[in-house]
Length: 572
Image 1 (cartoon, rainbow, N blue to C red):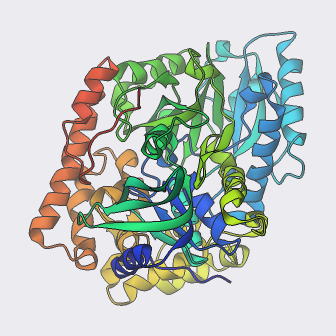
Image 2: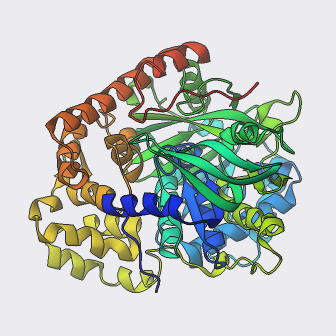
């Protein structure tokens, strides 16, 4: 069993020293799921690897998705069978081998709205969906009458459907999955650093030989030598390519997708919903005691780090939902809103709903590989393809990818752990539901989380304002999971920012005081972190009242970035 690495403040200092003191086979830029997967893929091939991320791990697209591992039903309709087959195979690997502690099946109801041709058409698609990916551990789809469908989802208006089909996909907390992939890469020897920004690429003629990396927390800079640099920066792909002095083999366009989060009792349903819209589909996704509802698909050419949801975006989701629900969801019901950017491979003038969700890998010049596009679900395949492309700079003797056989940290021993939940709860004097919550977030690392309370039993108390999380989880985020700021803890190590009515405002000060001793914060720093978080929440709320992207972007940028990084937009 691979021993996990604690991404502590001391470990970060060691990683920073190591970053510039020795050459690396591979330098990965970007700490989203593709970069994390690439670092893990390279490290498990026996290569020396460094991963740098300018903000927090998963701070971009990889924490703002629909949080699904899925094949994508609508891609079947587009005849993109290869993408669906690949994604379903990856879904199965996650469920059974790589991340069973993080990824779990969830049911969806597909309401039928017509008679005659629609049921056999959708049935044919779901039959293919059930079989195209090969072996599967999720149940096959089921046919439902209108009465049967309403039994699963009483919230639907009777006249809004004629029947339905029930099928299964899978779900994960995207930010936690990405972080766990980063930690697994570190366990296999990768040097991983957040708040580490690439400010320049190093050249030897046309060849890229490394990068100059700045520690965003201190301003210190170091030159990092690498045989190959792999650009895994998503919507920043073109920006990094511009540093290399060329245009690259492809370009990326940003498509904004927003989601809203509402309490579970606002929609009476035992299953998720997938609803057709005029351009795409709308998901209503079970998320603990909430529903996640999304998404939109619109072009975005403003700030890449902090995309903003507008009132028009939110109204679009509410209006589409209102056409099928007996009791509409309103603005007053919304507890969380988030917006993310999909990196789509760009053509000339396509609508973003038509741009490719497939990925591309290119080696535009010696020493540089770029990978972009794709779906969260297929990150592992993207990573393997990127490292394969790097063989041109590393040598043909680089072994093949082995990540389909590499469980993420916390996965090994998970089935046995499930049999210990009640005993752990009894030993720690915690409710079984609390331990179940921890096990489904940390897997076999749960013992590390609970061990923090050995010296401070108060850490077994709930976080004020978000009692579903233990204070120990906040401490663990700073001591083991590389969190450097309060925003990291409330937005990605936990999901308090989208799950609590105050969006984390009520939890900010208590969380900051928990991690202050771990991160060496004095009272002034605690106050600064809390103020920055509150300003972010206020700016997001203001942006969500604006109708246009430009106004929403301006409102969102009114809050200072806790990481001092200049705002960036997509290159023209």
